[in-house]
Amino acid sequence: MADVTRQFFEGLAAKGHEPLLESFTGTLRFDLRDGERTEHWYVVLTRGDIVVAHDDGDAEAVMGTDLATFDAILSGEMNAMAALLRGVVTMHGRSILLLAFQRLFRGSVGAGDELRTAGYSRERS
Image (cartoon, rainbow, N blue to C red):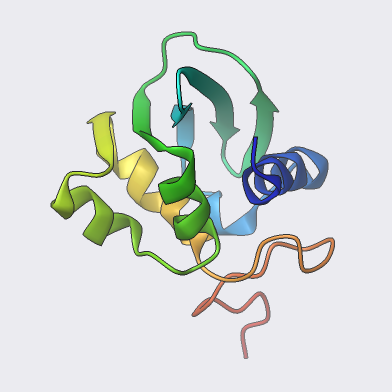
């Protein structure tokens, strides 16, 4: 498992709440292939409150790709929507959850305790 992916999901779990997702409730599963193995990350989102687990249970929205692609998306090297259009990422279910969740993919992961997101400010004037 790549450090970028682990740091991302562990950071979400430690944070416990993401203001950017306060309008959303649902379950998401990320199926990340690494050779013959598939790693599953399961996220329960309740109005911004986030619980993360390793689980391959049913989810309202599912994203699938290889681990290298997901790492590139998290690090900002690749756009999630462009990857979807090229067919290297699959999405099933309530796509609005994945589209909202992708706000967290932009920027630098593991740069500190906070997840930094490009284009979104926590402080509004």
